[in-house]
Length: 476
Ligand code: GLN
Image (cartoon, rainbow, N blue to C red; front, top):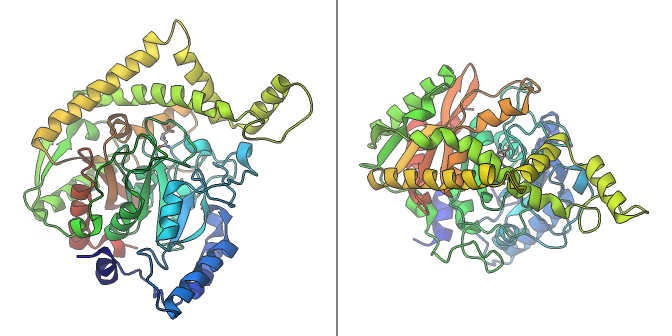
């Protein structure tokens, strides 16, 4: 079936798109109503209206519309948008306006999506709760006193509150899946190399991926379909055909083998594991074969991830020196300027990571930390590959706990521990999805499904079958 007709038949947005201009006005009102959640850093009403008018003209003149026509998109603020401020939620880039669009933005614009604005995030995507943003924390949609998850917290909340249809996030160690779980939406981290990173402001280049977030599976599949594929401007993208994700998602799930990683359920909040086990029962009910598996190396993923991520960030963030990027130019020697700008404009968490990253790469320590972490990374990759010989997907909770109170986790280490379920996926470059698994104490829980390389289709298939069975889009 051709994509356009599938979209018309099955992926209809909730609201009528016959008047996109009207829809943009409604979106702006909705964002205003939900201002307290602090999901957006920048709202581009003017740009969105311009695009909506263009679509309106296409409709009246009978021109062919893109597959995202009329859908409102929120974009994480580390993805470059031409002419639209892109801050990474940092004082460093407070006034930075890119002169080009990221590849994913070019692609969604070509398909007639309406970009409504840029969403709040942890500074430079370093965090798990959107609390490290220079613009203040984003609030959880279900309990405003709690964190939204992170680092793509703004994107998740923009979707959950109904302001936008779809959103783009980025995931280095869980940043799409974590806030998706904390706000009861779908979030997918694609295989490393499936989606171009050109125009994504790098945190840790060997781990970063851009991915889709939405309330339902088919919109997630549709957005992935649009952004996936080879890009000559990102040499890590693969030259592999992009499947018709939307059509594939409608496929059967009978006989799909799901391996439940037992280590993923150790030492976690029982209110989370109970919900995730019952979601796994549902998978069994709809025809999946669910069995327990073991992944002994999983416990080493967290330390290996933080060493590698910090090492890479210390190098990636060197460009913010007030000369090439960031800050305001000041008079005086360049070394003084550099120190002043980096001291004033980076937040505490970013500085901590640059220090630690520089340390683990330094002569004399590199072998003990960075090189060892790279070896662990390889082991984790191999362990996953062995499991994928017998299973199509692997399952864990997305997060080990329920969304915490803003400010409640005091030490950085406590926050790092929250990534225990998600980081192994990035180390191995695998695709993974978080889907809603219900509520405990009125707070959302997410189920994480991990696929083999380039097998996003199986994840979407299960997600869609499970969505039909549970009706999770109607839970709120
Ligand atoms: N919480 C992880 C970190 O702080 C992951 C962040 C991300 O995926 N961008 O590094």
